[in-house]
Length: 65
Image (cartoon, rainbow, N blue to C red; front, side, top):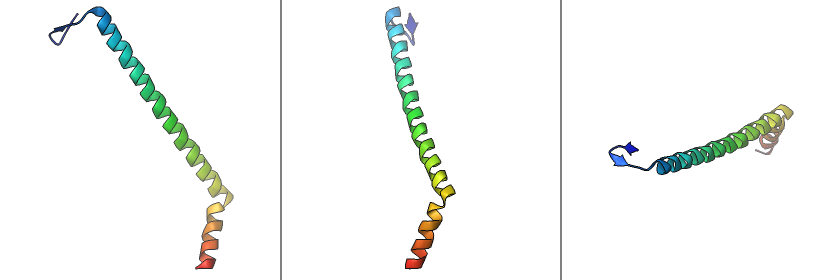
C-alpha cells in the first residue's frame, strides 16, 4: 500500500491504525475521568450551597471583622 509516496506493507498500516485507536481510546478515557471529577466537584459545591454552608462562613467572617 502506497501512502504519501511511501510504500507500507498492509500489516504496518493495520498496526498503525490499531495504535491510533488505542491512543484515542486512552485520551477519551482520560477526558471522561476529568469530566467525572468536575461533575462531582460541582455537585458537592451545589449541595454545600443548598445547605447554607457558605452563608454561615460569610456571616462568621463578618462578625469577626
